[in-house]
Amino acid sequence: VAKSGSAHYLHYTEQMRERLRHQLITETELRQAILDEAFVLHYQPKVAIADGTPIGGEALIRWRHPTRGLIYPMEFIPIAEETGLMVPIGEWALRAACRQIQTWIEAGRQPLQIAVNVSERQFRWGHLPALIDVLLRETGIPPHLLQLEITESVLPEDLEGALRQMAWIADCGVALALDDFGTGYSSLSYLRELPLDCLKVDRKFVQDMEQDSGTRHIVQAIVAMAKAMGLKVVAEGVETEGERSLLRGMGVEEGQGYLFARPLPVKEFELFCGL
Ligand code: C2E
Ligand code: CA
Ligand code: CA
Ligand code: CA
Image 1 (cartoon, protein in one colour):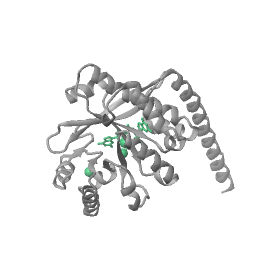
Image 2 (image 1 turned 120 degrees about the vertical axis):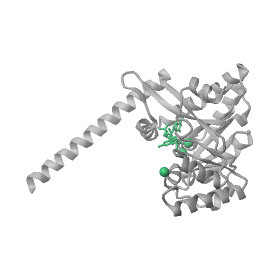
Image 3 (image 1 turned 30 degrees about the vertical axis):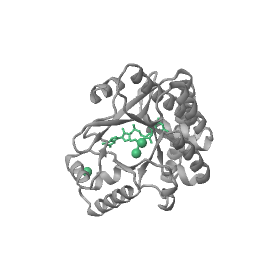
Image 4 (image 1 turned 60 degrees about the vertical axis):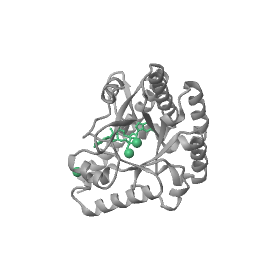
């Protein structure tokens, strides 16, 4: 028993050491990636649930790693958050999205609203409103073409500070969406205090809706509440026709998910949207 115990212990520390090593390498490589701007945005269409008409897009960042190819956010955003690198990476994403909108406008295309994810770290930084202001000036884009997606977990950390920044950003005319709605531990009471345009129903609810009537009731309640508050509802992670028709029946107007389109490189996004 003692032997297998110590073998287990050895294995455990080796695993920990390996993970730490991986984190350190990733951090170093991420710092270089920021200097090289080795990132790219893919755009996932948001469509009208009723007929699939494209009505916007969500920008999703990918890391173009020199040897490993495209790396998805799950693999580097947690490390970026821990090391403070999320602020410059988030700034890159915001600027890239604004420039993309500017490019469409300058080419005479009819641009769609693009949503960019903003993490808790970027709010704690304290300069997000100033950055948004700079980007709007730099690119000259109409503010309503930009939307920020904020997760519920952003809020309780420093509610006052986050609220003040959101109010300022909303005053600029930039749209705000609450992401992953229903998964956080936030209370409903301050929902009315947030200057929101839109609630995004979390993918987990959409996923379970067909099989589980309890989940259906939750989605129904979220939709009713959002409508009563004058907010738009977007369902994320729509993968099946069944989910789509349930959502449609509940009066959800916008959807996003593999059923309609995956996150796409910009050229394919333009094709999909007829831009
Ligand atoms: P999120 O904001 O919840 O984004 C939706 C995620 O769900 C994306 O993963 C998207 O590819 C995926 N997805 C979309 N439709 C479906 C579907 O039908 N089924 C399934 N199973 N998945 C679907 P992705 O691109 O890997 O991004 C993961 C997370 O990384 C995002 O979650 C967001 O929190 C974060 N993220 C991505 N880009 C940025 C960024 O530029 N800045 C910040 N701060 N966070 C970002
Ligand atoms: Ca999002
Ligand atoms: Ca989400
Ligand atoms: Ca399902």
